[in-house]
Length: 266
Image (cartoon, rainbow, N blue to C red; front, side):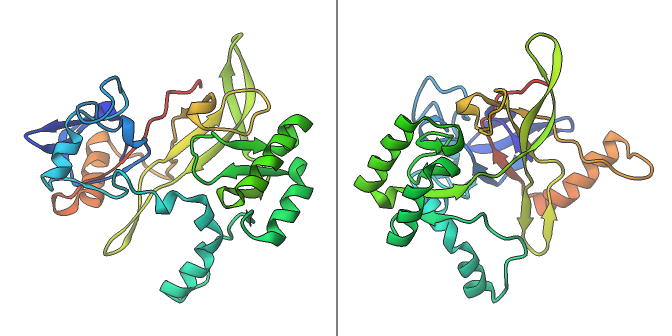
């Protein structure tokens, strides 16, 4: 399931998720929270995003962190262009969905293209996340582009660039009591064990600022409820809980994606 820190609790060094059907044991967590905020008893005591006692449960071997604290190789944006080749090398398959074209500023040819087209590209620092260290070229000033050009030349390994991806729009309730279109993106979650399981729902992030394409919560973005529509008879809550328990908690194993996303509007 997709949860926030307050949806989880630690009891006797085991992690549980609060659900409408009671507590459910969690065995694996994929986190979307920075290291410093994941456990206020171990790291920043002022964090309200994480789960008190989570690191003790992790040290005891009672819960696994798919992306443990201190690891970030999979989050390095410079790895992104190599993903199709990784799929072909390790799986012997071609990617079904194409990657967004990505330019590595560490490569001379790519760097030259990026510097010539800063006004058309999105430039991202490979060691940053949450919308930090980013230039939205088509919305930038000349001074901002000049600043990023200097940063790229000084440390090209630290930057990648991509074309602007036009996100979908959906109605959002905004200040003033009216509805306006805002850009959104959807992140579904798939578990791959004995067979692939598509998690019910997903994370829909919204750019709350008018005209913005940045959905990161740290940059003024928010989130929306994600509903998956079914055809035919709608199951009861008891049937839904039982079905999901059988799929995502088979043999007592639970998987949670821990996110830090403030509630959006509408």
